[in-house]
Length: 116
Image 1 (cartoon, rainbow, N blue to C red):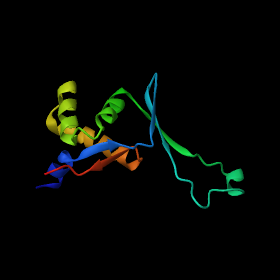
Image 2: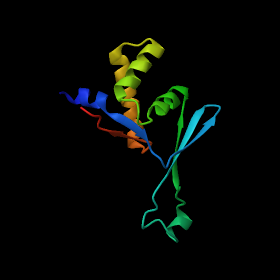
Image 3: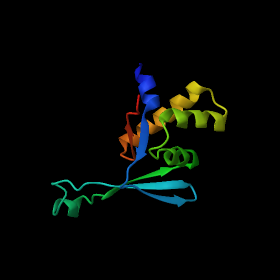
Image 4: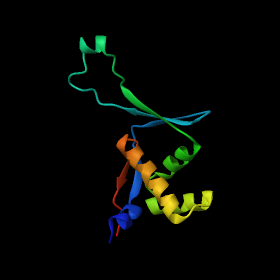
């Protein structure tokens, strides 16, 4: 089984600590950050540090995030995107995987291996 096949079987889950706030541009996702040992006064007096990471998602990004509910496999999201936007499977797979990688890097989702 190839790595691409394994990735398509994986199941994305949203970060439970993240909060979602709908606005006119889509969805604002806020992820709380752990406070580092060095992030205290007097350093924070000079360099104010944020306690959360915020990511603004457009309508399509919000839709992909809504599919990351622990029930849909990555392949399911790819196929739905393909049908919804009249894309080929490869185009849809590339777009969804790249976007999910960005969500993973920012701590918004975690992608867990699916059952074989």
